[in-house]
Amino acid sequence: MTEELTIFDPADHLKSDQAIADFMCDALETNDPGYVAHALGVVARAKGMGEVARQTSLSREQLYRSFSSEGNPTLRTTLAVLQAVGIQLLARQAESGKA
Image (cartoon, rainbow, N blue to C red):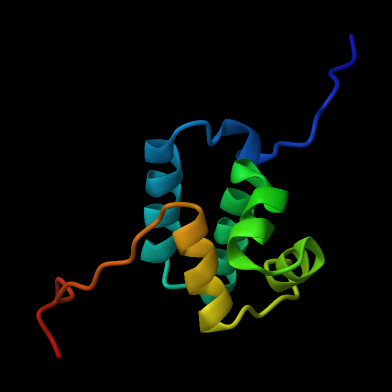
């Protein structure tokens, strides 16, 4: 018997705002800029890239390019997409207590 493998797309599993918030929280905790950008791209696809493009006044192509593995989104683009998908960034002191 042969097993059939399928491609896993995390965007298919981000069905609620809480799931999206948890996913982005986990991504941000990695402190890996590439992974954070990738995760935000996944969230944008989960919400609908066309809708995110409309809300941010950016093209779908620009969003796909910015959040691809080779992309490097600007802070302006990142903040616009975060707002469009309903994610708010908050600052707090690092747990180590070092400044």
